[in-house]
Length: 150
Image (cartoon, rainbow, N blue to C red):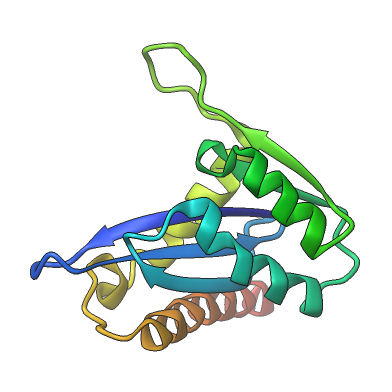
């Protein structure tokens, strides 16, 4: 299971962050959207609590460098019996694909293909989260349609 936050800015300088939780295939599990002024480690609490209720069998959580802090480690320990693994960027000055981080980045690009999610059109976080869910449903339905016709 992996999660990562993605910040988006709107034309009115309003912002939101999407914290998404995906499995190792990049398929959507959960989402939490809130204001851009909330730190990643503070915003992940709601997502992790929601994930613990829905998916009690998860053993390991992988996050990016924005979640690396002692406060986040304590939060992960409080919300469930899982281990936290932080995947950091390489120090090289060129593009390097990090396999574990790429899973979440790929999922974010899948949902960003939808016009409403490319920019922050929504004013309410519940609506933004609903559109993320709808975008992932669309991705999964397209995959099912391709596999059914083959």
